[in-house]
Length: 381
Picture (cartoon, rainbow, N blue to C red):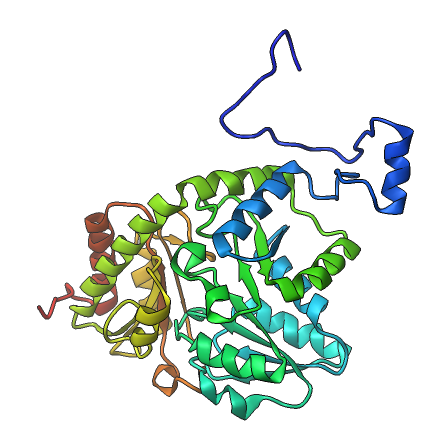
């Protein structure tokens, strides 16, 4: 307390530090015996982290949640926690690229076999399971090309065979998808994205069901992982405005995607909430909303210099990775998809629709697309 009265703020204070002081010698003895109920050291999940984990766990409907210093940190450490030498891991083809890289560069060194499965896998998961399959890693919708898996069909098969399922649910957040209700065992969020919403925080979270909780908590503690207090505080701040922001992202994303569908230059828009999406029926069944991230392709295979002219002409869209923040972003790339041959060799334009005025965003895209085509774009409506 400073002065005569304690300071009370709207948001909780940020706790930083390495050494945590004990009130008595007995407290320190209890730490060694495992009976001390409080925080013991700076890496021991400070109050801001505990509050963030509790909030996310309640949103997810999980049994236990742990925070990580980034989304990829959450992915790496969760895979290491639940896999061991000789295990077999299945990952969807449209998985987040750093996840795929980690599997190839690191897990293979520990004699863990990793195989890819179709981006829109469902009950055909049976065809890819081996006797040593330990974990199935889903991401729905998947990165960049936005295929959706039939999650209940996958988890039904996995449960029968004693295989764990993990879902990266960052696109939908806990507001628009409840993976535990669909039978998923482990749910991962890149808190960096929609849940913080301002592109200035790196955080990840992993929530698990009761059967996984004890093992996961033990492994987390053994690896002495923690998330910085300031970032956890900003994560809590982001959760307070998430419903309002996500509603706007959803509405703006659908409006821009539908507008793109009317342009002669556009071949297809890859947005699960649109009726033309191949797994739209699954999205309607399992999801309660859509975020503002989607992709589209062109009818013509434009050379790289034309793509560059389009993107460089944009003023409101930043050129940068990640998504889920208030600022609109754009990326472009070609992604091999054996299970989606119609996208083979296509340049995929990914848009993060932010919180700017929708008409301004459409006008910005219209100008850029005009640079690409060499003529004003024309709506076919």
